[in-house]
Image (cartoon, rainbow, N blue to C red; front, side, top):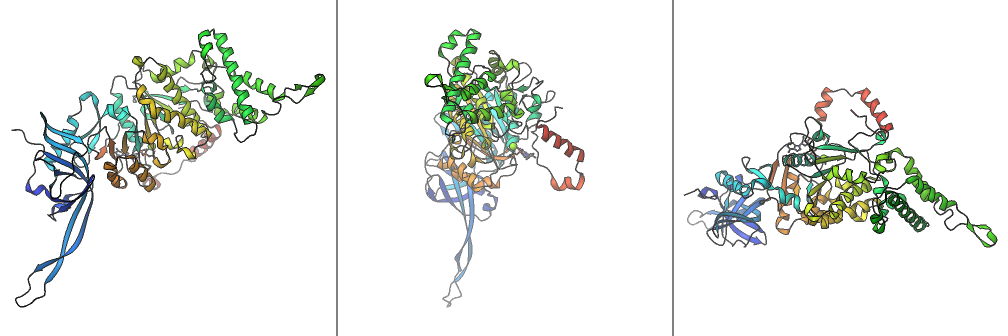
Length: 584
Ligand SMILES: Nc1ncnc2c1ncn2[C@@H]1O[C@H](COP(=O)(O)OP(=O)(O)OP(=O)(O)O)[C@@H](O)[C@H]1O
Ligand SMILES: [Mg+2]
């Protein structure tokens, strides 16, 4: 007969259940030696209601207290009793699943969650050695080959590969959370690398620091790199440079950049802006002979229009006199009311940092340009496996949220309006999400635009095959609405209390206890909590082959070896002035 998966010897016995509290159990340890083998995150089996069932738990806390114990009878005639210290070891564990030796017809079935509560006094065993290997092997074996996303191996058993369900991981939004330097960017690179082996992966990475560039190097990388145009790209933009011309922004996005809501004329400014933009878009459609679009478009539709005409119309409004009695000029209806709006717009138009928005090349003003651009992001081509990395590092921080939001909204809206059966699912990786998807109460007008888009994707994206992967070092600063829609959490070391608290609250009660080990995780170690992996245990992630430019520097060693490069400092000052990096 085949070796059973769990085959316990007497030496594996830890003790007995002494207390149960929903998903937590307390185990009284009988053997003081065995307890030294138990660490945080060790996998345990507790005998279930029948001989064929074990409840699987993970240790959360191991404590030793000392009680007084009667050591023995005194000498005859001596009626004092001798007391001595006795160690009492207790293990606190969280129940994470149920293992059945047979379940219906099927042998060896593990499922998440505990179906029943363990009874007091039930035996409890330590799963290690061969038992652990067989048990961990069982977890990955349930996934079909084409569904497997191999992330690394289990910390409790280095021989067992930690395999998640790639489908489940991407299906319903996920997040990668961890303190700075815990290994988030490396995990993203690893997941992208695994996805790149598929025929047509479709992932768009929003790269805030340009750190994923090595993954898109033409000779060695597997992804396609794009860059939002910086001030240096306006004259002769390369093929990888993207513009997001102003006409892509909807009314609210545009106003969030240009309107000062505290200005008493704000409503007038917004209404004139809206009227003119609508008319200018209508004119473009007329020139393009798009009569069918003309009938139903709105001011929010992405239709090119001429910025200089808009500026002129606003100037006219702002200076036009009214006509009073006897044809005498009087103060015009809009006169002087648009001054501040106009000057804010002009300031943006003249600032080269906003060139990617307001200074697009002529090609990006053409009607057909948008479809071709979206095709680059949602399609795949011969020389690109379908993973696209978009570098936002040169986008000014005040408009970053609007730009990220507009970009994601366009991709999402196109997907939404596409024939349902022709859609290919895609995922957007939001690196450094706290920078543009903050908690709502703290959000400014620009951030609220980005939030609206991403919250919409988080809530309804699943139906259209759009998912997001939120990456952040400050989960407590990231929109709760978005995080709470995530189904899988790859949580790396997290040291801050508030951040741990957020992760804990996002977990179902039964798993919340596991978050206690988050501050203890080593770099590159993580808990994968969610439905993508059966057992929410500690895993060591594999290192990606193409590594992001994010490495932790060896300060002490480098100070011992390297002299600062004055020439490089000088160049950096020039780059700072230029506000754009020299292209290699
Ligand atoms: N799986 C891993 N195995 C070994 N080392 C790793 C692993 N992941 C990360 N590291 C180490 O940790 C360093 C920092 O990792 P990474 O850049 O991914 O951190 P991060 O969480 O993205 O930080 P930040 O929030 O600051 O962006 C890497 O340069 C690498 O040296
Ligand atoms: Mg990072």
